[in-house]
Length: 179
Image (cartoon, rainbow, N blue to C red; front, side, top):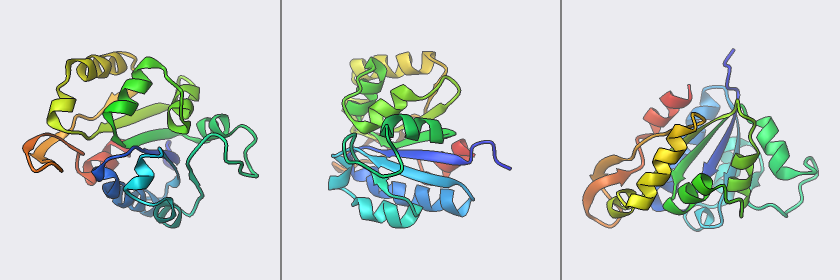
């Protein structure tokens, strides 16, 4: 029996969001229960319906859309999850998590986790954004908390056409970190 059976997948806006479809598929195939929450920006890249079909569960988009089974959505999701992965993680959401800003469902759920729930953060962004001193300071802050594992982006061709550090790590590598 896996110790991390309920996986909560967070998806931020970025072209790499399409790769998270494969991650959800692998998690389901691996025997995990998966629920997905998306930022509003993420829905511009991949539709919630895609993740609903892949996970077999409703997709969580915001704090205020009522679902019958949950009275307090962010607390219910935080209590349900044994583990959380955010892939891709945008610079915006990375900074919000580091600053304790809870202005959307994803950041509020992450804040509501108990101290035992580990979070794997998988940033994907342009190399200049990744190397920005403020982003790097936020990464250091998160790593120091011993709750977050920040998987550094890979080098390769970026969405803008440049070559550099900023690509979402390969889905199979993310999957291995979860297992």
